[in-house]
Image 1 (cartoon, one colour):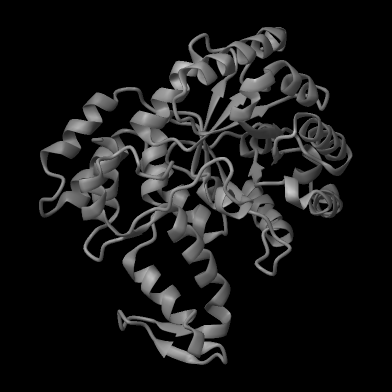
Image 2 (cartoon, helix red, strand yellow; image 1 turned 180 degrees about the vertical axis):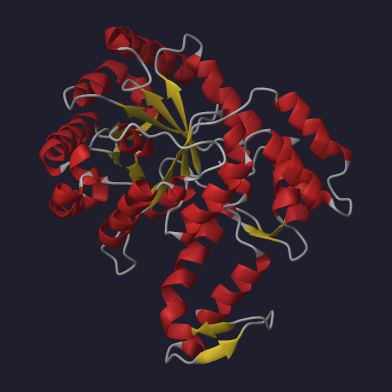
Length: 388
């Protein structure tokens, strides 16, 4: 699979200076962590889940999905959800279609080896598990269960812990909780693909809910937690992990009203303002601002609960031609000794040593999501993704 692989090749050629690279479930962990993109959540109880998985990959370019047995379903539905997953994985395996990276969000460690056993041969389609309310105390049991299931099945399985526990939120326990989480995920580093932020649970602890015109970063108590998580777990010195952006919980279902507005004048003068108006009308302006703030704060990828969020997340993950130019200049072999140089776009200073880590991350993102042509921006990428 590749990002924007759901749009025709001829259209991609017109959009990208450097095409997104192909990847699959067997790719290196570093590649997969950068390529998660908009990770779409779906309740594990959906009766036509296999069909939905194939559809979202083909129609929207979904590259990763989480099939949830935790908060998205009622406590009484867990056993039925597990049985449904076994049926749906068998259906997917029989279809032979390409599928996204698939993860199961469990409630308890014992579910991991049990589900891997019950999935049998169709478990080859499973990339790993999402581990809820992750702390050092809970996390060790989850990761030991994952390690045992991997050994028993002979297949590589990844973990994506969700950081959402009260211990992490409350100021008096946060530092200790973060140190414990860091110790745990470092011990199992080869198994941990990315860390996910459970911002809805953070808000719940204080009876908060952000409005559609506000980002997670406007809720100061949440923004403080995100900052501390990145501080401890997102460092660029080799000790850090990929940390994904929080869920955006607002959506509207009238996408048919949205797409024609884009088709009418996708390449006309003033298109950016027209598109912005359409996005505001569909509660996506806040999403776009939050995606930009995610990246500015060191997060990559995003949890999504509605398919209409996928294309905007991916469009804003593409590296601009200017970013790519700066990153390449900074990482030139003859710049190993440092120094300062004017950017090729002649609008900024590139300082080689301080900007090196940024440049390396930018080229990693460029490999996963591609580099836009010099005259291509978010509007064209979003339009192409929606109209595929």
